[in-house]
Length: 330
Length: 228
Figure 1 (spheres, one colour):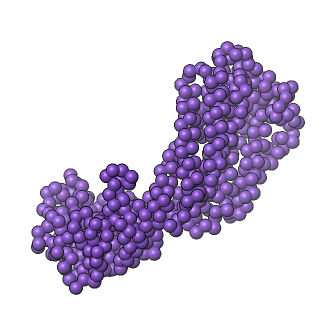
Figure 2 (cartoon, chains in turn blue, green):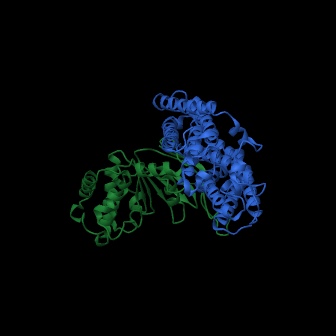
Figure 3 (cartoon, helix red, strand yellow):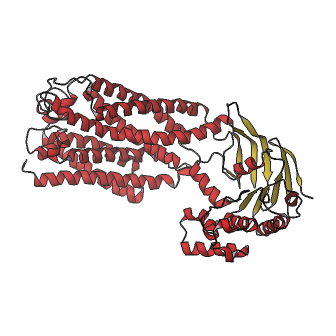
């Protein structure tokens, strides 16, 4: 293992979050089993008091979980100088078998954690805990993922040995290697470009319609998550080429470096923020008719829709600016 | 209408110093009436009033306030109810030392963000109602016991609550001031406010303005009857 403050922070943070989640999951099971708002029993009242505490604690824990993705990426990028052949986070993550599964798990957990925060926020706006069982059901669902992430991340950091020879991103993200990314890179550009612009346009149209009329929420939610996936594909396929000004460099990690003004962080924050907010719109849709949420959900959905539109607009604006001013013309 | 269903309150549950303050109290309190809880120290009067006033939560049981169940409410909703529905008069006054009587009266209304000038006018009117206009700008530590008590009442009324809760309000007052206090309670009741008082002072529970006296002992209701 390499002793670096960020690694220690990530390891301790993830272990702490896992313990908090396991503790909360324990009470989550009690809530799923024994919750009855109509009862005035001692158990019910103690669960009501405890859920308030757990919800507050989990807000902070899951908030750190969201931030930890970017700290993880930053750390992986920062450490690349220690490994022969690594040029960015892509090479650092490739030094052992745990790196890429760990980052994939962190992205999945980012989305799940974001959804839980939205569900928790919605439930806390109502006076009668209408989503309490769903909230703890989701927490129980998330727990193995977070614990799994702790395991993968720990295995990754504990197996890090300096001076390992690894592959650079130019090799990892090329059409000649085997894997999903090489498939993306090998795909012809026009259909991906058309798909990217079409999904973006559709998201904006559906978003504006939903924002003003409150109609088509599910479709907007699905489209926004599809746009996220298509955007990631487009980023690897052709968008990052404009940043690197190289027609063959498809690495999604180099844009996180100082050389590219850390623009990758802006790109990933806006894309992930848009995806979580878009998913959130659809997730709370079925609860619209609950009495205590009648006034809460429409206004929250509008805020989330606004977030999706702003996030994707910033992403799109960044991409367009780079396309216009890049020395590379495709 | 305030309804208590099988209310239990236990302090320090599971510890050697566990103390059961209320044993399954069920009770219905009429709105716009003056109800007095009497009983010796430790009988559960203050605990009961603090539960009704949303300042504490029961260990078990439910409380309904004007047909709304309040014990299960999350804290952010309770704060709202506490501020809008209840006015509290404490035994030890609990005035903030170092600031004026006027500021003390205005404090409970600050979280609502009301216009400062209109709030100040309202607070001055309340102080005027209790003949304290000339003391508005005096610091509370300079006030006599009776004056401090009246400032406390003015503070309890600043948010125009429908229920006034007073815990041993005459414990530090002489007979004359105690009777004066009850006259103020009569005025409030005439305006339609529900008044709940915990006291073992005979001046209170023998007062003709009281509609109902509930006697408590060891965390239980011993007798509950219409005042004579």
